Each structure stands twice: as structure tokens, then as C-alpha cells.
Length: 173
Image 1 (cartoon, helix red, strand yellow):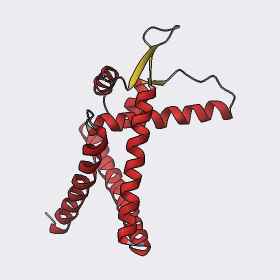
Image 2 (cartoon, rainbow, N blue to C red):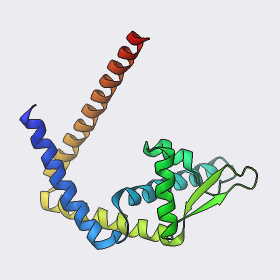
Image 3 (cartoon, one colour):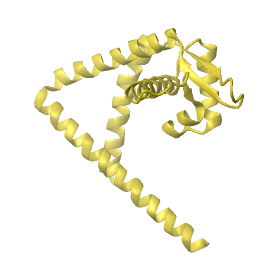
Image 4 (cartoon, rainbow, N blue to C red):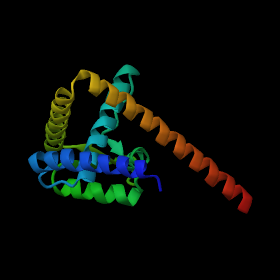
């Protein structure tokens, strides 16, 4: 295995550990990182639906469907449902059953959940603003460009692996 890949992995691990540890200790209290990620995703999706409904003069759904959250997060429906149950017990989200179809359940943030998401997001941006100040503008811009390149590289690798898997499946059928 390439030692440069190991160095990159360890660098990202150090960044994740230091920044997420700081955020978690300060604000997330009773939440695990994946639970906060679900809150963040739910807020973003609902805000986008709200904006879309206003622009297109559509009726706004009372929340986001669990199936939509599952697709957006690439987490299984049972996994999303379990996370939502935890968040509901903590008072951060509420489930809203459809009056037309009992199988259809929407999820939305409570005021407490929205406030927590807002507070943690602001704290995250503050941490990254401080890091950018420490690095300086030139190094920060260079880092952003390199991270964008890395994201493209990962996307290309995923695409190549998907193509290889698809070709292998065709050969076996």
C-alpha cells in the first residue's frame, strides 16, 4: 500500500479528531456525530423544500419523508428510522403521520432541534474561520483547491469501481 495514502488518511483522522472533538465537547452534549448529521440533513432538506414550494407556489409538506432522508444520506431506512427515534426521544424532531396515508410519515425539526443545529453549525464555522485565519488566505485558498481536487479524485475512483462492479456482474449473469 502507498505510504502517501496512509499519510493522507492519518492527516484527515487528526483533523476529524481535533475539530469534531472540540465541537462535540462544547455543544453536541447528548448527540452522537451521526445523529447531528441527521439533524443537519433534515434541516437542509426541509429548508430546500420550503424554498421550492414558495418559488413554485406549491403546498409545503409538513416535513421530510424518511425515504427521502434515506436516499439523501445513503443510510438504510431502518438506520434512518432508528436515528430519528433517538432524536425524537431527545425532543429534537417530531414525526407527523399523513392524514391521507397512514404509512406515510414525515419528520421535522422541533424548535429545540433547530436551535441546536444552528448553534453547532455556527460553532463549526467559527472553528474553521479561526483555522483559516491561522493558515492565512493564500494557504487556505491552496488547501481548498487541493481538497476540491481530492473530492474529484474520490468521485472518479468511485465511478471506476462502480464500472468494474457493473462489468463483473454482467459477466456472471
